[in-house]
Length: 92
Ligand SMILES: [Zn+2]
Image (cartoon, rainbow, N blue to C red; front, side, top):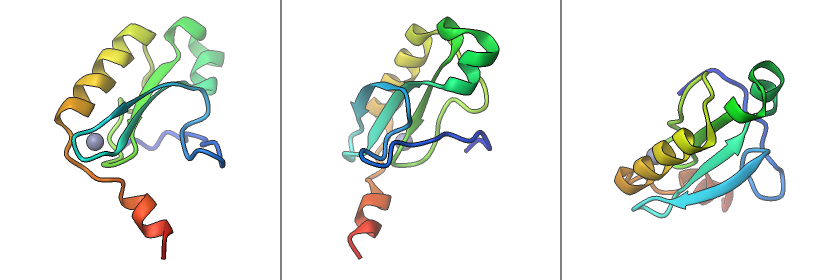
């Protein structure tokens, strides 16, 4: 897990800027999103990141093109078996 701060939407729990979501084998979500801080530094075209909301793995502190981040997010979703643990914990 990276130390990069990723703001989330309080209504959905997804990272702010999410424009696609992939489902893992364990029913967790993997969000593809445009990171505002990265956009300010690198420009919109290179500001995409991804984060698995199940195992909390993502692409780390860097950002990249949408196509590259999308492929990595989709590949992770196809192999990750984590379940949405945080959602289960929220029910207590
Ligand atoms: Zn995962």
